[in-house]
Length: 166
Image 1 (cartoon, rainbow, N blue to C red):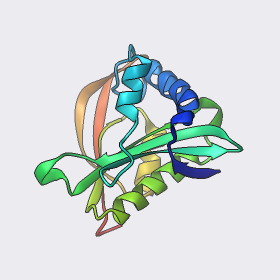
Image 2 (image 1 turned 30 degrees about the vertical axis):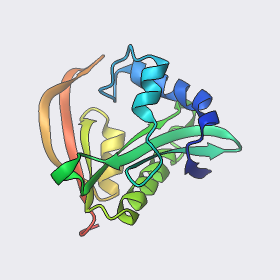
Image 3 (image 1 turned 60 degrees about the horizontal axis):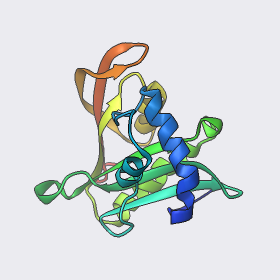
Image 4 (image 1 turned 90 degrees about the horizontal axis):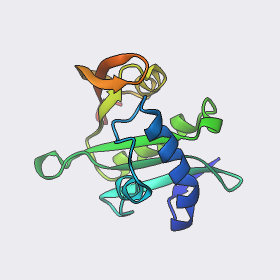
């Protein structure tokens, strides 16, 4: 598996992953009626120091994608953020861990003080455990803020990795 910057020709493989993850409504807060144009505008970062989208590839097949950048502008611009989506056929193979590690390295290399995830569904226990294993802490939970299709309303965690400590 290699991870590299997103290229325009990757979109034909990235969009089905984004569409599937968003329409499942069990991990992301994105609108499940998102169009392809909206998906591209939401997922693809500019590819400069302010943000980057990458893909994880195995023999030319996209296994997953990540986007990373500033969490907030202005006085919050020293904190980065990232999001990850892995194709259903590639889950459990370390793709998410590799993408998250890449994003953490990118944040450190670009001088951010840490990385914050604003909305991790509490029911997404696999992701929560993965992030914790990489140095993230749950710094708060908004009760009932995520409408899971099977579990009903569950909490949304705010998670943070302080680069000075990790």
